[in-house]
Length: 229
Image (cartoon, rainbow, N blue to C red; front, top):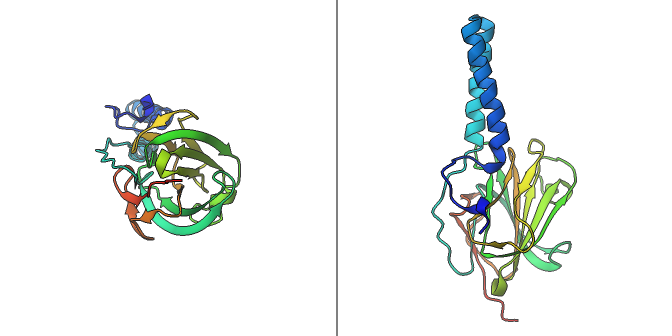
């Protein structure tokens, strides 16, 4: 497991450190100005800075979670709501029939992504693109995204896409090909509301339905069958 994926005392997402520092400095500046020049203007600035600081802390929260991994059991790759489950053909990365599960993350969700199933990373690729609203079906193909393929051995390959949206303009993935990963470990972050697509083998037994809320590293998504080919 990479160092990024391990539990730690720092309760915020690694990719949010710079943003948290910036808004902490902004808040400290607002407090200083309030004490130096106490008036309605500095008071309003202080309230705004405090609100933004709390919002950033809330958004970048990254709680440790107790992961229960079982053979072939796919866990949620992040927090969000299931908006689509569709059988399809994925040609670009897997060249295989798959079941695509799409999750929409709103501003209140934890935006850290977690590995859905133990395996080995075989591909991490960023694709430039558009910034359509993430809940639109076409966003999966035309928006900017990071694709990651993990080989789970006898359970097959899984493709995970972190997809940017109209607000979320940056996806982060801290893994590289060759990394060995464990179910539920952290691997990335999407800044602000966006979408995660999971592409599973066509024989997967789905354990969620459209409209279900998913918790990353906790909610069982699907049970995969062993591949005996």
